[in-house]
Amino acid sequence: MPVQVRSSEPDGGVDGPSAVNRMQGTGTETLDISAGGVQFYMDSEIAVGAQIEFTIALSAEALGTPADVLVNCVGRVVRRLKKGEQHVVAAVIDEYRFERS
Image (cartoon, rainbow, N blue to C red; front, side, top):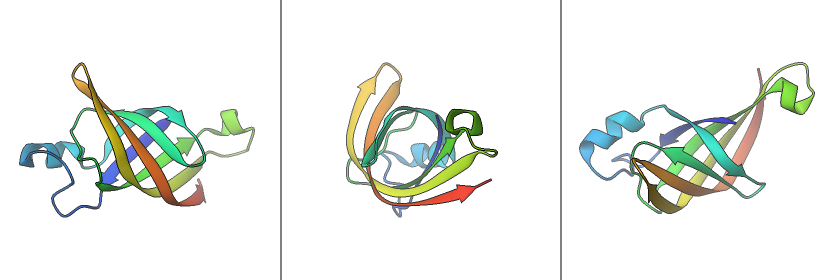
C-alpha cells in the first residue's frame, strides 16, 4: 500500500541536513501493516525515536468500498535497518484518523 511520510521533528529527525529535504513528502510502499504499527522502505535516513506523520492509502478495490480511504497517522520510529541503498523503517501508530477521498 502506498504511504506518504513526513517528520514532525524540528530537524526532520533525519541524519544529516541534506536528508531533511529528501524526506519532505517522501512516498514509499508499506512492507507490513497492523493495528499497532507499520513497516516501510525509505530512501532517507530517519532517527529511531523520531516522531513522524504518515498517510496510508487504502484502495477502494482492496477494501470493497466505492472510494479510496486515507489513514492519517502520527507515530514514532522504533527501528531502522539498512537494506542496500534503502532503509527499512518500523513505526508504532500512536494516533490515526480515517479520511475518505
